[in-house]
Image (tube, rainbow, N blue to C red; front, side):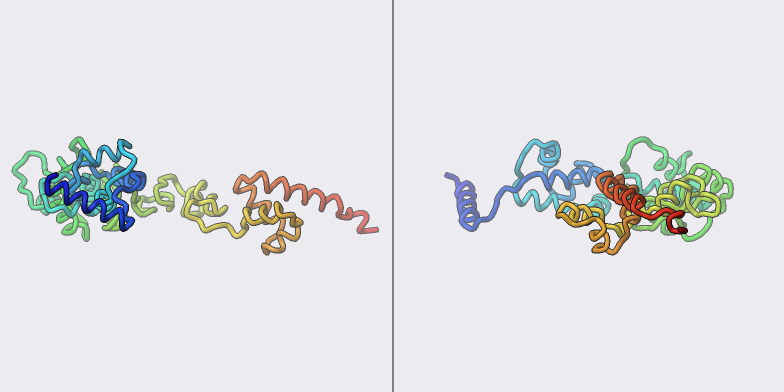
Length: 303
């Protein structure tokens, strides 16, 4: 038995005696890799940031193993998207999304490609300015050196308006959000959206480019969603339908259940209709029918 094998066995026995898991489920690691991939990171980038072999990462991501060494899992789970842009290797590849967003924003502010290229520190010896190449080239990756150069240009120019009125008009017509529509820390985030309402006559809801409804800042659909509190980010409705049904299932009278929740039958019914809860509306509507049936008619009241 070699010294290396002997040391491995000693460590293995020690970890086992201490109850230290040497292998952990691969599921959480695979989910984290999926998130990193969705954020635009390549396997090479993840391998570079984690110092784990690319083949190992690929095997985990594709479901080729049920467990992962604890140390490998810790290294992979520690990788964050920002680390890719902070890698010391200037020749390493990074997603080009952030650079393209910055270039488009500068164009929308009236800065021409020659201005952006010069601010990035490149000479204009080429027929096509470097920023134009970065914006229109195929693929999803650029070197970190190019990314950093575009970031420098953005930092230098984004605070003012450029001399290119025609450039600005064309960029806005193409739908390029200007610098004012972006938070700097979100420019490299593929899930981020520009601030709503930067385009004249646009709905103020993020990601919606429809025309706003008359006398409203949002389009008809988004305004209706906000009015009905059906936005994905809306707070939980005041009427807790699950709690209402729990009381009913426990044998509580529907009228007393609504009083315990501090709401009316009408409010419960309205919330149930909006939420598509037919199990609740069956109860609330039967109560409403019974109330109408037991209520005295107008003629009886007059008599």
